[in-house]
Image (cartoon, rainbow, N blue to C red; front, top):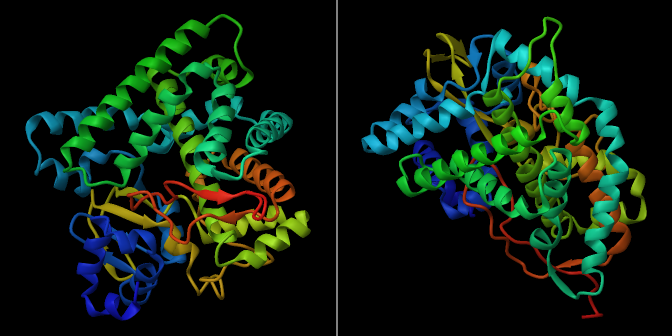
Length: 425
């Protein structure tokens, strides 16, 4: 989008267009993020306060004055709830009542308790044991497209790998994986949509409670019997005082694992390939020629094209940040992708550089709520890039335009058509 067009509109109007999913801003939000950082680093918008610089995002993510979850008290929820009918207010409240039992929706000692229990199951040793299986899944999926000319890489690979990995870890039947994808996809659309869109509210409410019912039945059937290492460890996880997950806590936590372990990983690989096969083709070639660059390249790609762009937090009390007064129960929109592009922290932040040293990013959060599955996500990304660059070094994008998902909170291509071996079609 022409930057002069962007600057011609008042900042509040431009921000409003972004949150209403303006196609140009969804396709390229980074010019807007830069403008917010420069003109109003902490910016009060209609139903939320935007925090955009690296320093301020880090402060919000580590502040005891900022809370997770409790969306029904927040200004974003209340703004939406005041504009829908009673039926849809009830559906919104029911969804958040369940989702706030997730690890990412809790605070203080309750959060610490859930995290301690989860860490007894989700250990570095358990993740390390998954590497060979992830490599086998990746190679098997690529075997399936080896002889094709044109493929749609999201449908043929990117969504399958993380979904197969998390499903196997949680003992979820192969036959049920497409349902999981559908339910998780609806939840992903919802978090970055207008909550006054009653069709989206109804669809997501249906998906959340179908997912809850399905997972409850899976856990009930696995208790006391043979199951996977991770699911068995989660069911059996016991604190020093004999504490265990309640069923709702476990179901809510696994819901978070499925979304974070599948949707965001799919989006990240798609984002990475759009960039590497597009304007940064020379860096794709470097990865093909020097695979030892891949671990650092993954960190830079996580910084440059994070699948998580914005997350909502809540002010637990009044405080001030960046000279702006924050009031209790304000929704704080934490602009992760903007922080990752902050020039004060990363010189030349708007350029991808897979050889960049000391990469700083907030893609997995920071502090007490740092993503529990970060090591697994990194492993999946590295395995995928190693396998794809080795097998298809001449791969090209099949289109010059990218159709992005219609959400402002997460970022990823809807589809990714590629030519595996140009000249051999």
